[in-house]
Length: 510
Image 1 (cartoon, rainbow, N blue to C red):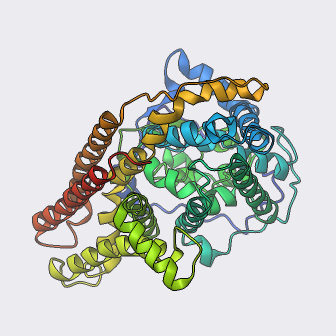
Image 2: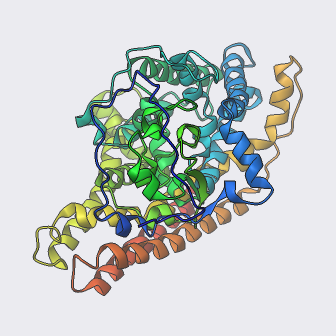
């Protein structure tokens, strides 16, 4: 069985294990059972390094130890400018470079970029990049001895996957709302937030090994990992999985002469999704067989094809609940409820943490209820078929395109209403104050229509995705797969319609 046949790979003599900080007690035999069925639908076919002309150039880039450094350096410079501008720049948020580029440009454009190309942001992330440099004690050189304790994430916590990241994101989002950081509020608040994330990431890098922060704790990892699974970048995959399965040294995971072991703990031989590939190219450098390529895939492959993980399903439910809260909090009905609850609890102001968490939990709970009913009403009378997670995970994966579309629509007002202020904020870095008209790229009535369109497209894509997933994942769970598919699709349509109704009443509110 060789699931990827991009080019013939001849086994080479294995290089010695050089990363003494990552011992492995034994080499496990290759596990092939069920591999072909699980991976056949998720195997990308086009290796970018095999393309004529472009391929050799990309290969040289990926082999260079400076590859990721050149992506991280520009964002590192920009983020430190954000911090400095927030502390020492103008107090006017719309004219401050730090707030303008963070909330009007970066946060707004990250969503469409993620939906298209997956975890490409992680390749250039200044938080992970700075942590790497300090932990490895080098900007790009392959070092042996790392700085820090090098602990592993406890297995009992690691099993929750990106759910911990989603929890951090929910906490950070509440703090942002409470202090009005992304309003944007006072520029120094943006600087404090960025410095707080940097401090949190550095502590994690010094306590744990590799990119534990990025895989489990980064507040954006769950958002990028879930929504990025719609993208066309599959990540680094083996050209021939048999070579990986027969490899006795696993340099891609343990580290080799030229590359570190995968910082994201992703084994290329069994990778079935782009969700956990940070595109750092370390496995590409480390593999002694030159058996790794960087692949593209059809859109939605990493949503439809992979094994559905219950932890990711809970992540999607939490992210959906959060974005629905962000829509509801723009309506008068929320203000009335929040003010009443604050008065009862003697809480200072919006948003009350109780209604915040209850809203997120209630939205996720609706889909928990739907999955439970499916597992009881239309399932076979077997343990697997009546398992709640067997229905919940596929149902939530089908919502990913719609959740991504809703996040994108939600941040559009900041971009279209205020992105034109960025040039004047850049000039302001050099001490020049420029009067810039409050120019809107789109008038508000057109902005709302674009939001409707984005949600409509997200709904249509989610209907397609849900239908494909139901046909694949529900066929062993029920004799009435058609009914299960109809119910799942109806849930998507109702959710999309509800989102559009909320945008109608919000009228493009930021």
